[in-house]
Length: 118
Image (cartoon, rainbow, N blue to C red; front, side):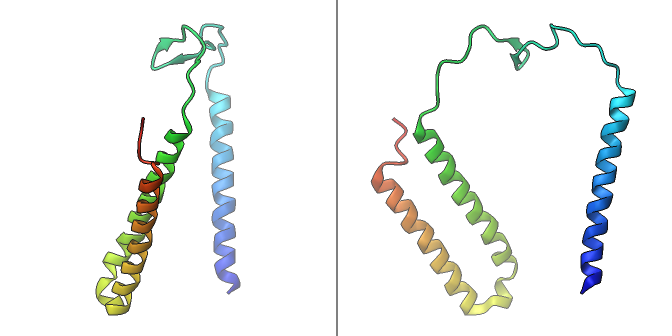
């Protein structure tokens, strides 16, 4: 049992040493030419003309959260589909309950108007 933790610890130490050494190597090799023009804020290569004044509405975040929920659904459906034969009827019923709960949540959000953009 301890060997499993030793391998994880070794992988963590290796990743930390490699990451740190690559950052240090980059700092030593790259040129350092600070310039005020380089420090200016820009987006997509276009200089910023005015500070942003428009804010996102909460509905934008609700739609984003709904997207994440259904993205997680896809993550759970893929392994289930791979192991479909091994799970049998029990696995099929469990995924039906899972999808039913997600559809109930979607119906609730639809009823509350969370999917209306305007």
